Structures are given as C-alpha cells and as structure tokens.
Length: 177
Image 1 (cartoon, one colour):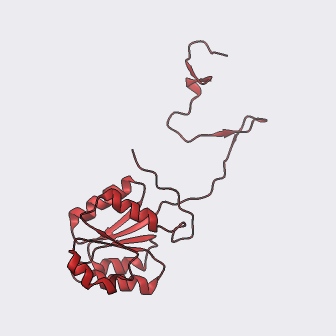
Image 2 (cartoon, helix red, strand yellow):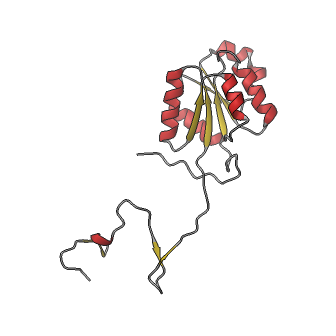
Image 3 (cartoon, one colour):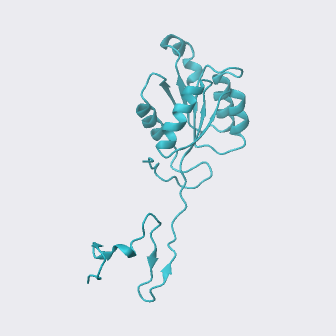
C-alpha cells in the first residue's frame, strides 16, 4: 500500500523511517515498542607508551579510528602508575623512554600481570634488539616503528584477548567513517 504524497523504500514510507537513530523493535501483538536485550560489549582498551609526541598522537588517532579505545602516555613512570589504576587489554611500549626505560616498564607489567599482552614498538636497530633479545622474551611481539600502521594493527588484533580486562566480551573494533 502506498500512502499519498510519500515515497517508500522497501514498502516503508519515508516518514516512518528511523533516520539516524537506533532501531526500535515493536511487539506485533500490541504494537508497543519493546526493549531488546543485548550483551554488553566493550571496545578493546590499549595503553600506548611512547615519548615521541607525534608518534603517540599518530598511533592514538589511527587506533581510535579503528574502533579501539586508547590511553597514551609519554613516560614509563606514567605507564606504571596508570597500569595499576585502569584496566587495559594490551600495551604498546617503546623501549627508549626518558626516565624509566621501556624494559623496566615491561618487567613491571609482566610481574603484575603475566598474561597481559605487551607489544614492543621500537625504532632501535637490529643490533640493539639482538643485544636485548633475552630481556625482550617477556614481550608478546616486537614491531619496528618503520612498519606500517596496518601491520601494527594486525599484530594488535592477533594479541588482543577475547574478553576485556574487566571480563566483558570485546566487540569487534568498528572503524569510524
């Protein structure tokens, strides 16, 4: 049935479409709106630790665009202080930090939660990485800063736990348009 003066899409008059709003479910017997119970799902939460402001900002923007909640800090001390206060699902950690070095932060994180995934994101050369290889054994992955953000995202997705640090299931990150 077509209502006079309205256009339709898929048989639903445009004036009845829910433009830009959340879908509403109706009880067919009563016609009243019903609540739809859905499981609470959370976006992954990542702690980014890098003393280079431009890289910290770039990573934060990119990961947020990919649907990941990001907290970014500049120092190892800030990371250690924050790690005990807020739940994070994964940490991206630079090795060369001012003050508390990245390896000390890595040890702190793994001592407090051995299951917490840590990705070393560093610009150090291969020789320095080889020298620190035994210490880096605690890390879940090492990604060079020269790698693409897409490659980093793939490593992040590989190491994210299935549920958040608060026990809630993760929603699949939804890229922002």
